[in-house]
Amino acid sequence: MQIEYLIIGQGISGTWLSYYLQKENKSFLVIDNNKANSPSRIAAGIINPVTGRRHVEVWMANDIIPFAHNEYSQLGKELGITTISQKNIIDFFPSPQMRISFFQRIEEKANYVSDYKVQDHFSNHFNYDFGCGEINPVYTVHLDLLLPVWRKKLKEKNQLLEEEFEINHLKISDNKIQYKKITADKIIFCDGVGSAENPYFNLLPFAPNKGEVLLVEIPDLPITNIYKKGMMLAPLSTKGLWWIGSNYAWEFDNHDPTHLFKEKTEALLKEWLKVPFKTVDHLAGIRPATLERRPFVGLHPLDPSVAILNGMGTKGCSLAPLFAKQLIDNLLYHRNIHPEADVTRFQKILSRSIL
Ligand SMILES: Cc1cc2nc3c(=O)[nH]c(=O)nc-3n(C[C@H](O)[C@H](O)[C@H](O)COP(=O)(O)OP(=O)(O)OC[C@H]3O[C@@H](n4cnc5c(N)ncnc54)[C@H](O)[C@@H]3O)c2cc1C
Picture 1 (tube, protein in one colour):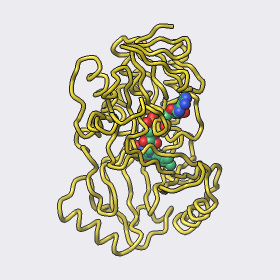
Picture 2 (picture 1 turned 90 degrees about the vertical axis):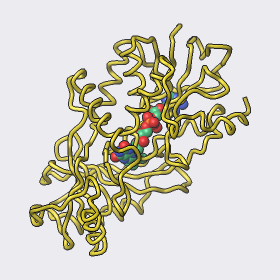
Picture 3 (picture 1 turned 180 degrees about the vertical axis):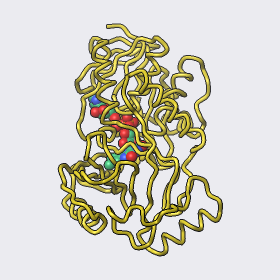
Picture 4 (picture 1 turned 30 degrees about the vertical axis):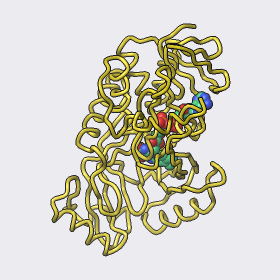
């Protein structure tokens, strides 16, 4: 088989990359092992414009979020599904200090945070002693719909191989790559934490971290919003099903869910909710995070047949559309990738690679 691009991984990064290649009428194949606990398959898909206890605006919020919203909406139209919905966060303050800090941000005229006028609006469903505020706009990407629907489309066009990619079968020569019976001009790694062990990119400063989530049935909760109190509680596409998470562990012995997270999260739900809930699943995944919290995008500086779209960390849903587009524009039209994301910033480090 002869193609232009071989993509490894159909998480949210590989999905966007293959979408833009299709738009450009390029020939490609995606290899994906459909790993059930890959972060793209267990994430809530939240696109939140602020971060941390101080509700600071996220990196490039004004560029990345409107772009993502437009692109998901367009893709949804093409696929005939809803891929993105606005679900503002109702932030229930866990302490008086957090309430003070939130209102300070409003006084500072920070973007995206506002007072919630009817403070007792949620009192039939939640216990909250210190009031609430609103983060607006916030979106959820319906990954549980989008990824399988895009996968089906790729399969129908014979553009997906559902199997494990084994790097020891990869051969790189001048201006082409060979993988088993596949010859391609370029290989692009969108394999999440897999790239942290890949000899082409293992010297990049990846900082993988583990996150856990519970899936819970809460039939009586209005799906108008995402709710937050220490953790995020977000509605999923299946009626009555909710996602609650997450935590961040930089040191871990295995990829399994832990009893401690389940206990802590169920205790929070018992104290917070006034309506019944039932835990139906508990999942854990490893985020492809990076030390400097910026993605890795572009061609390998030593080998122009090898490229990467990775390092999406905690924000794959917002970052993947823009950086997939920038990578395609770079490969096809030699346009620049944002310097803070362009992997050539690690040229020196990657030159030490064993290749
Ligand atoms: C608990 C949790 C909650 C999160 N919540 C959010 C959120 O609300 N919003 C948000 O934006 N981000 C969230 N994230 C982060 C987000 O999930 C990641 O940023 C994003 O999914 C990364 O996508 P990716 O496609 O780059 O990598 P991945 O999701 O890791 O995708 C890689 C793909 O490659 C495949 N693959 C890997 N190795 C191989 C191989 N050798 N052969 C074949 N296939 C292979 C995998 O099966 C997978 O399909 C969350 C993460 C976790 C763990």
